[in-house]
Amino acid sequence: MQLSTAKFGLNCLALALISSGLFACSNDVSSTNSNATTSVSSENSDKVTVPVQPSNFLSDGLVEPISKVSCSLSDGTTGECYKIVTENKPSDVGMGPWCPTNIADDASKGGIWLDDGEVHDVDGEFVKNLADFYGDSNWNMYNKTTGEIIKTSTLEECVAAADPNVGDEYRNYCVECLPEYVEDLTDTFYIPVTPKASASITKFGGPGPQSRGPSVRGIAFNGVRFDAPAPVNNILGAYTLAPFDDAGGHINSHEGYHYHAATGLTTKIAQDDGHAPMIGYALDGYGIYANTDADGNEYTDLDEARGHYDEVRGYHYHVDKAGNNNFIDGLRGVYAED
Picture 1 (cartoon, helix red, strand yellow):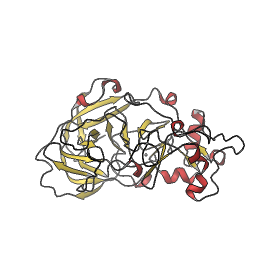
Picture 2 (tube, rainbow, N blue to C red):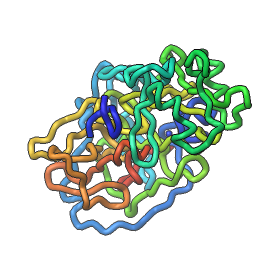
Picture 3 (cartoon, one colour):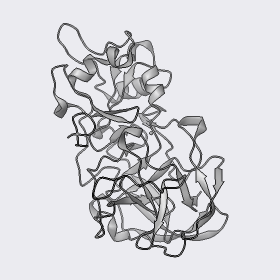
Picture 4 (cartoon, one colour):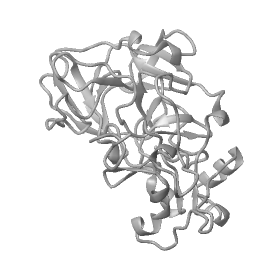
């Protein structure tokens, strides 16, 4: 799979494991902190409003049929939401691999790493050259005699190596949690049946204590969450690496499998007019679309949340580039609260 190097052609802490599990955000998809809001002026946001279509979600990823329930919304009102309970694993694309086994392994044996806007293959050579890549001789994640890469191999090791206060014994580990560690987990999401514009954009902060609004950004059609940015600095500060698979996901022992980047492998809905394909829904019910249009062009008129309006799709979002470890930057609409 080639991204910016050799993968596709072209983130309680937020990592998917690092905070009590393997870099994720919050176990409550509707949890919020104090919101940072930015007033919005948009003449067109509500002229066309497209309701959430439950049929867009893959049935194989659902634990139970999608249902309508009453929900409390972030603007203090009560509304109607879809309750979506998912399997916490994709039915359309496989999970893994994450960490290669030996420095001789090619890109097919490992996942990807997101750094400074670029997507890198985590092959054996990448792990071997971490000291050069980061300009720090303390990186040494393989046996110099055998070439074997040092990585977690049990649930206990996965949890220990992902701890923000990781002990010295787990430094220089490639951290991967496996699907069998979290096979009984499910996710429950509440999304407004029809999106409703808020008076202002709820801007997300950074990973960890800076986070604002829901930690989950949205849901892919396969039922897997689009998560907040992974706290990469925390991971690297412990001299660990927690790769994502080629679909942009990895596993947290508490939250299970989740995405930190959209790489184009999950189910998408093509648009007849050459617009970027739809890949899921944000927690406010507005659609999430890919980064570029059919010709590979990025959109230049996006607002602070990475959204804009057209008369076909109404207000909707476009995800950030995969290498930026990010989906969207805020929510234009109201969202479900506890």
